Length: 351
Image (spheres, rainbow, N blue to C red):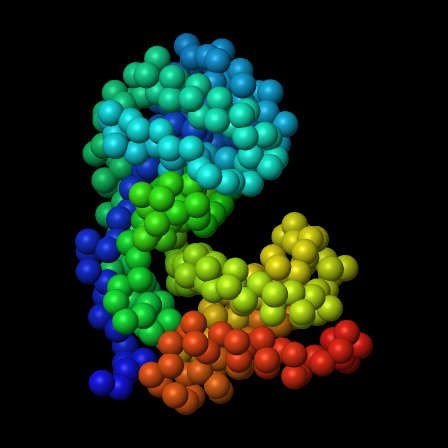
């Protein structure tokens, strides 16, 4: 049967979408907040309760080790995905993670064990359980919007998956005041190999201690789902074609302000960002008003992701425009060929 990629997909079934406050991520976040190695949470009634509840554990061994870690960033709590089977928690050590590279494997594994001990000593599960009604209330509008607009199904349709590609989990981070982050869950814990995960914070800096956190995602939900989802959907594909991608390294616009602003210091990272942003532009062209698609493309030019538009053009003319049964993984090498043809030498990128 011929695929019908341009029909508007139905909303993803509810059992493919989970919106939650993940207990593992919340645990690691709280340890890091207590250590003073996390951006200060925006004020809320929940943040005030967390501060009061966990204050007696400010010098717990897990917190002390967090203070000593050499390299700590705001996305370190993704290690919470190494914990599961709550409340009788199992701990899984990743085979490899950038956190080992930054801090040492033994150090990170010791830190994970101490965070698990913090879970026991602080009676974290009691705190988490008493906020279940809050978590459910925060999740409902996010889940409703994602289901109503069919954003996940539209992404699946773009890639032309023959079966549903993944389970989706959106982690709401009430103590996260810094932004959103895609989590490569399968690299952290193989039990989640088929999961697309990203987290988003409570991003209202003018909040007060009585405020209830909200996670409406706003207008950025469309690009957020498609952008972060594409990072995860294309990760294995980019690894498979790593050598071919490397041949285009002369395209890296390392000196541009956008690269520095986004901490992009190698071509693989640069290509990854241009790829997913190009995919988002192509999806905007398919599902959003033409004006919004043009704005999305212009935004990437301003941000110095100068190949995103080229990638979107290749997708629009060569993927969406023909061979409707071809899946994205089959089409992917044509993106590389398109860039190589348009920019055959380093000199051509400046023209």
